[in-house]
Amino acid sequence: MTVHLHWFLPTGGDGRTLVDRHAYTDGGITRSRVTPVSGVRAPDIEYLAQIAKAAEGLGFEAVLTPTGTWCEDAWLTTVALAQHTERLKFLVAFRPGVISPVLAAQMAATYQRITRGRLLLNVVTGGDSTEQRRFGDHVDHDRRYARTDEFLSVVRGVWGGQPFDFAGEHFQVEGGLTALPPDPLPEIFFGGSSPAAGPVAARHTDVYLTWGEPPEQVKQKIDWIRGLAEKEGRTVRFGIRLHTISRDSAAEAWTTANRLLDDLDPDTIAAAQEALGRSESVGQQRMLALHGGSRDKLEISPNLWAGVGLVRGGAGTALVGSHADVADRIEEYHALGVEHFVLSGYPHLEEAYWFGEGVIPDLAARGLLPRVPPSPLSGVPAVNGRPASAPGGAPLLVGGGR
Image (tube, rainbow, N blue to C red; front, side, top):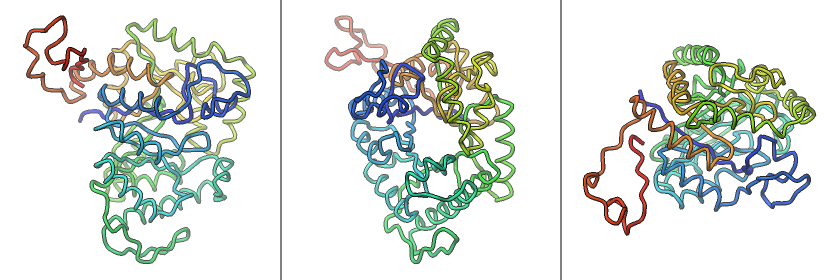
């Protein structure tokens, strides 16, 4: 069982800081400023295309695109980026409560044809009622998961190519149909740590995602979902969402991690923790419990650093260390049953290269990634100092094992 590596598209803006840009700017979308923050990069198509091309060239399989108030729309952004890439898949996050399931199924089918099969779906039920209400959704936490259960039943039903009827509490469909079902069917990724989320994952998802908790906690989640899926007669695969800071030496990586905290004063951390503490998401509460709002002892497990979660919601932990250290931790999670690693780092362009050029070759050497056959030109002498495999004398970066 090899690992699947995915990167992240920062469609709410990027930068060299952990300070949540949404609290200080418009997320970089129009470059206006409320309070100046250095190093903020707008999520324009040119910058996002740089990240997408880097991810594709480095050997990542897909990129996750988030959803929410402060992000550009994931569907529109990624279908545009598909025109700038050739193989890269897009893990598109969306909320099932604000769109018709039949329309979502049709959109997915169209997307697959436009991109020639490069869509993956990340179903985000939502753990913040304030955010949900911005989109006109007033359903409470547990009922949102019940609605997601119905939503995915309808989506899979109308992908069958025949008229599909459904009568539920949240959706009533008569003759629902996707005239041309997607080919291939997009894999469905889904996360949720609450008792209401588990059965939905067991019944519908292809890949269950967890945020980056210590290995023993991740194992408990895997055992929980696997047991529920077995009762449904299904098999679910597993993924994990983490940030990364990998460098040529562990000391350099930890220096980089600590530097990300330099602009975080106690008031900033306290305000962020208060806001995050109001989240209804069980997964978010588990993230907060890892550090308790304190800057002390942020290495909560070997090479697992909880500093990101001091001020940012969602994935709050990072793998920090030398390239070999980070590869060790990935191998450890993989041994528990994790196949998909959805990774990110600040800034996303530079960290993609640090990971891609440092960790990916190590993982390939361990047999965790498929090896790329050697180039037929690998033995041909170079010309004018350039490898013969570089057309027109242009330098060519060859990533062995990617």
